[in-house]
Image 1 (tube, rainbow, N blue to C red):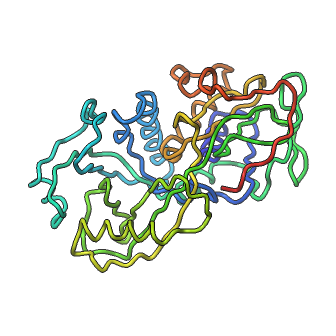
Image 2 (image 1 turned 90 degrees about the horizontal axis):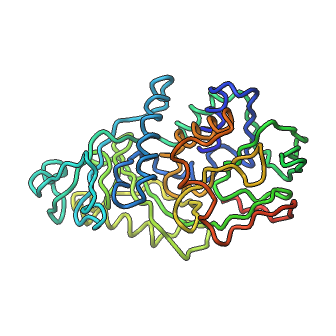
Image 3 (image 1 turned 45 degrees about the vertical axis):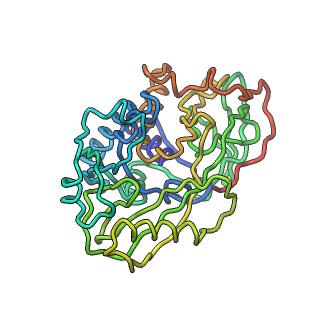
Length: 352
């Protein structure tokens, strides 16, 4: 999503010919397996304020993009059931509506056990694959199955990008690769890892949730429930773990006993790219005048894509970063960061 959104933003900004090259197929990574939730207020108090601020800007930008040409964005409420994290209680969203047990029961009849909640209206959700394809329609040239296999550098600039289809001589390059780019000849090495997560979708159910209910599920098309978003740290396997998806199903049945026999129709997992501090990188590649990167968006890639894309397009156009981008830049964030002065040979990351 970050690559497609950035290519679309560069084209809309009139930055010349824009070509998006994709090593696999569109939506083959974490973007294609995401829930597509656009809920900035969930980050209030729980994450650094710059993340929440950028997320709010990005939701506004999602709405503008959808208004220009529909991307399937749906207005979506968010209900967080108690208990709430201490940081959220200490610094709640200004949009929060505190609900007692009676009000929560009215919204979710039969919820077990009864509990209080925090409701934040007018957030949003997209089907990530449909939204990505809608943005891709705004990119003039896309080549899938076309990885960047090497780069060459001359005079502090990327001179060529090598691909199986031939070489490119770009004016500017943006690496939006999930994990930091590891391409022979590219002089950068940032610490990052992936965190596995599982999601499931149910058959259509006879209940109606008020949008997304944290710790329970999200109501999606055809009256199905989408649930999960687990953090399966320490699981390096590529397969869906039936024990994890079974626990997700059991959680739905425990909270909504009327769904005790609910059937799961889809189970999947994906790997989210993460930097050690949990924040994404949005920066120029150090030492290179015509190369930028964005990586490690972890659980916010879909949400952050439009704002990140606009920031990168403006930076390319003006030569200067926008105000407020300092928390997303590499400088002073990673003690173990290596920025080479000469091209280095490094292995390519996995397809995750």
